[in-house]
Length: 377
Image (cartoon, rainbow, N blue to C red; front, side):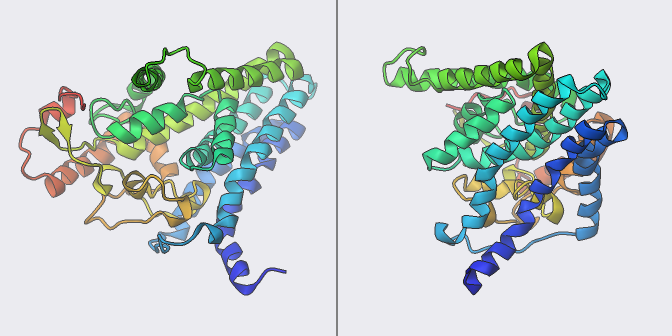
């Protein structure tokens, strides 16, 4: 039996378990076909936007000193998602290619919906896991990323993004006036290159070549090859193609989120290639309740960059005095982002206000807009 404090902790954690309710949606699409193949994207993108509008904001902050022993139910959902997603993806790969009642478009749409879940939930959970010191959790994060064939995200995020966010060296800090589609095709090669360069540089500091066995890229490639091989065993060439569809949608979802998180926000250049420390003001913050349930508080991104080791239930939200605020939750903001003129109309005035609020002393923003400032050391 659970004690009253344990029951209270479980009750508080349960909203973050809503992700499990999404798992049956692509399965329903695979079994019944027709319009049901749209359930996963419609519920994830549209329904959550509506629920966000109805449920309002959650601006309460947990005690950041809460001990690990009190976070069990929060940690558990991130750890069980990897096996759940594995069974979902590869179970569907065993079933869908041979499903005679599904036409080609319906089969593709089943895996579009699956990619919505593996991107919206799976990559977000892997992000949480990769920030932990526990080796088992980091391995689960690696496995989740391998399922979407984007394993290098670990190196890029930990070694490049967190270190260089808001500077010209960070590929995923979206530039002012840079539309999402231009951003997307820029970051795909740049993130891979910067991740590999970061790992190579770390090995070089230990006087080791890039091909040394400790380079995590060997693990990344092995795990991704295993995922592709299993897809081929279960579904042949169709299985590989459907896995690629799923992975492509997941990565697209991730980069949409990356685009929203830091658009137009830059750290002040102090001269001589030095930049100010990362502060809450360098990420867009959002307190929309439903999106934060689904995305395990990822929208409290200002605090995540300020305190990267802090587990998701302890992330703090900020007022407009300390961090810029998004007008809507991530679900709605990503819809807006795919329409660049609408995005600029909504967000450019907010970026200009952010500049006036936090950096009134900077009168020439041209170097920040063009990305021509010196690279940080």
